Image 1 (cartoon, rainbow, N blue to C red):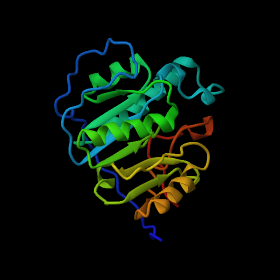
Image 2 (image 1 turned 90 degrees about the vertical axis):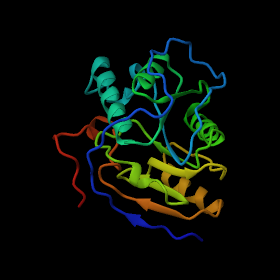
Image 3 (image 1 turned 135 degrees about the vertical axis):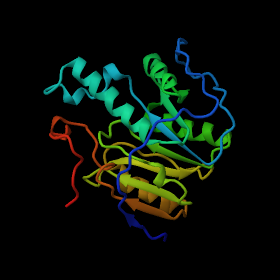
Image 4 (image 1 turned 180 degrees about the vertical axis):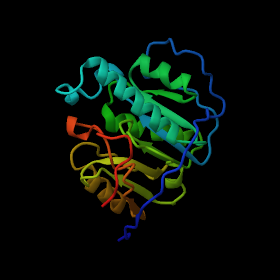
Length: 231
């Protein structure tokens, strides 16, 4: 059975740089499941699933109005996209406004309407692998303290970053072509660990306090300006 590894990463300042071959012009087409032409890829590609900003974080309604939730979702997504650093980025979505946002930030757009989160991510990994990517790093868009995720690439197996409750999975890095099945939802972290074992893949667990913090309920909204401190 592959043995887990635990690591902690230090934060770094990163600068967003558009991936190669991306046209930053506004996205004006209706989002559908038509095939997407991707540039030739290699190495690791960051995949960010992004829900429509206006519909995101409904559970924050007791604390934030619709405009506040929209603004928070955009700000966190901006930060996660920037945390990709020099790695190419693809955004999987089913919303034209999110697609425009992604393209204006130099990201590839993978429209996957009607698949749900797990189906959309699996389809995105498959498309990126078909274009030449050897691994895909899936990072959720609701990580307010996200920093350099490039250090998670290149392990050769599966890298899992759980949430701070060890329940959900905030970041997963998987080799393309391995047939990894995603199991997002409550309890996804143990299910993703079990999936790596099922496939016979080595895996490591990285508990970085700046990546384990996600925002789902009002209590998750950071109270201060600094990142959380592991204790």
